[in-house]
Length: 209
Image (cartoon, one colour):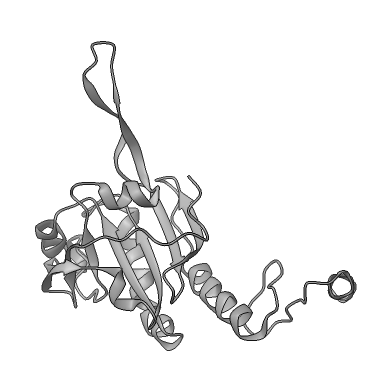
């Protein structure tokens, strides 16, 4: 399901914010017109790769904030499980100290609407509804602009931890293109040359690299 260049699905769900506060009706709509959003799904709380990603986002949180970007995580765990994980020290398998919001998607509707769920409901030979695949989300990351449009979607399978530096790079690339009207070539980083959408610009860029 292609979701890039479309409006991000709207939802309202319970979330734990600031590490220890319950928000009964958390929504990404609060950021419309104000902030960019990096919205990411991870499979489960109290697992192995997931905390490495969550702590990596937390370590870069100030940099995301410096480019007017909110970081929001989501899994199909309940808000109670989120709270328990956030209350558990790092040396005991928890993520205590993480401050960005973690959304609870117990119904799996948010992950389904974003195309991040690892499976789907179907019917067996007895016409009984069954779930096929993984009943939780894959490692999906979405960059949403201030108008609520998804501008990037990257989905990894379970063993493949994501690159948080690249999520930050994509935010900066998007903001650069919005400001300068140029496009960012392969491996673009802040401070590097970009391109105008002309053959001459591309030829000159390739000749200098």
